[in-house]
Amino acid sequence: MDNSGGVLDSDESISIAYLPDPVALELDPDYPSPAVRQRLLHESSMQFRQITCVELLDGILERGKFNILCVPGGFAPHLDARLGVLGADIIRRFVSGGGGYVGICAGAFFGIMLELLPLEARDIDHCGSPSGPCRLLFSPIGQCVLGAESDEVTVRYHNGPLFRPLNSAVYSLATFRTDFRGRSFPMMDSPAAVCGMHGLGLVVLISPHIEDGACERSHAPFRNIFRFCHTCSQASLHSQHSLDAQPTNCLQLLAEHCV
Image (cartoon, rainbow, N blue to C red; front, side, top):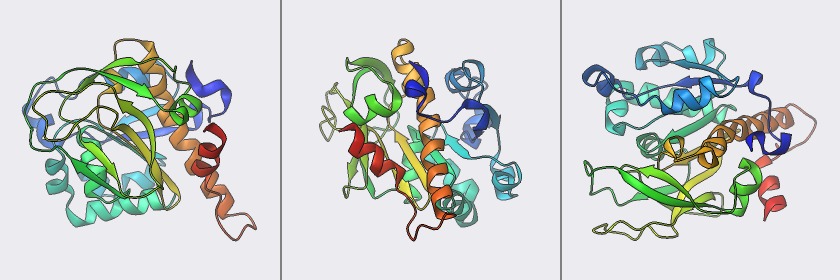
């Protein structure tokens, strides 16, 4: 089920800037995987545009009127090297000012490097190991706000981070139900997708490739992640401009409602 019963914002109001790994773009003609584009551009009415590091440094996030930045799989240090301190600061300002951030696999690592959420990344000693299927279970919050089913779903895992939230401001949207042998830390029941506020913007970090899941039972929640991201960020922005002394924490209200 898309749009979680109509609670989330409509697709026409969502504009996504898609920032792939710049080095992988130069070296691999098959990168990036078409799955993210397929889910967002061809299976929804969201606006979607691929951007470069040069464009981001030149101010396209603000000038292009984007409201979500999506960073897919790749290698996070490549982005860090190309964007530098200036690019990192641009992204932090974009999110704290009410923009959303969705990081997938390497994009989740990059979100942690940017300190968008109080998280630590564990199990980073296996870079380069092959991808494989893994099972996920969406949390009550994930089921509520993403329209996800309560049964386990199969998605693809390829060296994404294992998250260790540092405080209760980080919420789990899904947990791993697979453990790969040889890992330094157990994956089973650890968070596979998390979210939290950074200033006025919602941040969603996803370790596995939910967009590459086996069926619509993972595809629909993946699309709803972007609707959820936009809905919470916009609610925070609107409350800031009201007479309320404190911006409404949409995420906290949703979490309290869903659990």
